[in-house]
Image (cartoon, rainbow, N blue to C red; front, side, top):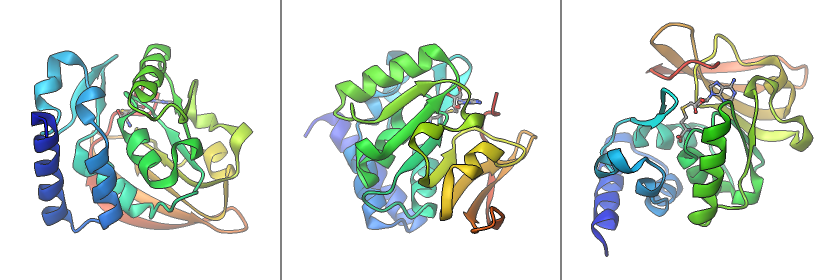
Length: 209
Ligand code: SAH
């Protein structure tokens, strides 16, 4: 076991105790080498439970937030998932552990981050995750309908195109709000396109561009 593995195991133990996460989510976090996704200069903090800078003024979310979001979405093997905000690709890799990499479609606004995320995902065994550079507000219609969709950046409201691309009965999750703090909101899409919402507390994310 390397030092990284030990640090990651200890982190998962802390998350399991503190947040009562689904065991499958714990296994997913235990499987993904977060240190390979964060830039060299902040690598020492890879298994601290906090966000880290990844360039372009963006951050990788804290591990507990990635784990909580995966838990709230109740991801099942085979679910087709849309992610808005690839960042460094870490969250996409955790999702891939749960649903299978070929079922993850992620859109990233910054070309450079999208390119780096694609490279890191390929180098860590998640090369079947699809990453596209573009505006995630438009979703990724080519692979719709999705069973699940989530945003890793804060929006005033769930983007219409993303809602449309989720199947009836499917679930969305996003930090909703325009201030420095937002509310993590999940929403089940009804057949008529309306949303049945549930709040999961205050969070802090970078804004949707
Ligand atoms: N899930 C990421 C964290 C991402 S931070 C990880 O594990 O590293 C939020 C990301 O959303 C940033 O990379 C930012 O560039 C991206 N973003 C912001 N607005 C966007 C938009 N309109 N479409 C797609 N991505 C967007």
